[in-house]
Amino acid sequence: MNTNLDVRVFPTPAELFPAAATEFIRLAQEAIRISGRFTVALSGGSTPKNLFKLLAGFPAADIPWEQVYFFFGDERHVPPDDPESNFRMANESLLSKIHARSENVFRIHAEEDAETAANNYEQQLIKFFNLQPGEFPRFDLIMLGLGPDGHTASLFPGSKGLSEKHRLVIANWVEKFNAFRITFTYPVLNQAACVTFMAAGADKADAVRRVLQDKMQGPPAGGVMPVDGKLLWFLDRDAASELPAGLRGSLR
Ligand code: 6PG
Image 1 (cartoon, rainbow, N blue to C red):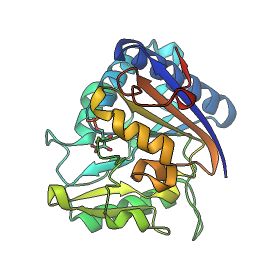
Image 2: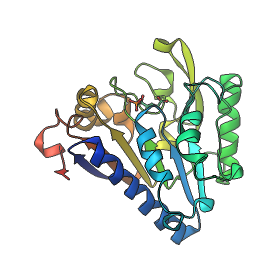
Image 3: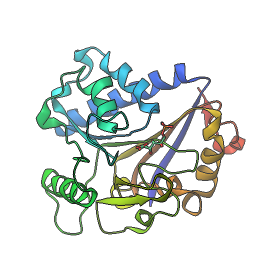
Image 4: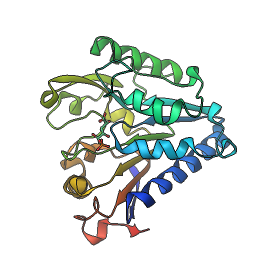
């Protein structure tokens, strides 16, 4: 395993999000320069909204959005116009603002039966990345968040999805929500060229410590260790407040 870990701590979210946006643009420009495209899986929840709004405000000259292909690392089992929908959040804060081409946006059709939605999304990945059986897609970037319980994407503590080693996308039953989520599995997350975690706020501090200290033995997010890629953490001081000095990286 060749995970290149980099923990970046910022005084407040006001410094964190611009830094994460700059890194997103840098990764996109590098991928487009090398391969003519940038494949990114967006994270859900509320934290990324601030980043997406910043990205929407970047000059078009900074990033040829028509060469960016948008995927989603997970989705709630709701229609795309539902307030809980990760697609709706990304569409309102970024995709509609940059006029992303519809053919470049791969939405999880979570209005369907959960298993059907997962199977269909898996087939879309296989087709887009031209995968052979047993192969996993290598995203240029997978963006992730972190729940206070240490979940990431929709890989929750105690859920069956944690042990999935073969499927790319699954419908994962989440007991505490009494609902399905559709989510990438660890093999997809760990095949990425770069994975970024963004976490802000003191409510994430315990999970951040457990993930970075205990890694695979810790909560679900600890299982994200790119086999040959970068693992970047963007934290504010509150979310990093329980990290021992050796794990805190450099305060930016
Ligand atoms: C989701 C996300 C999930 C999220 C964390 C953090 O669908 O909710 O994929 O993994 O990143 O729950 O959410 P917040 O950013 O809202 O704290």
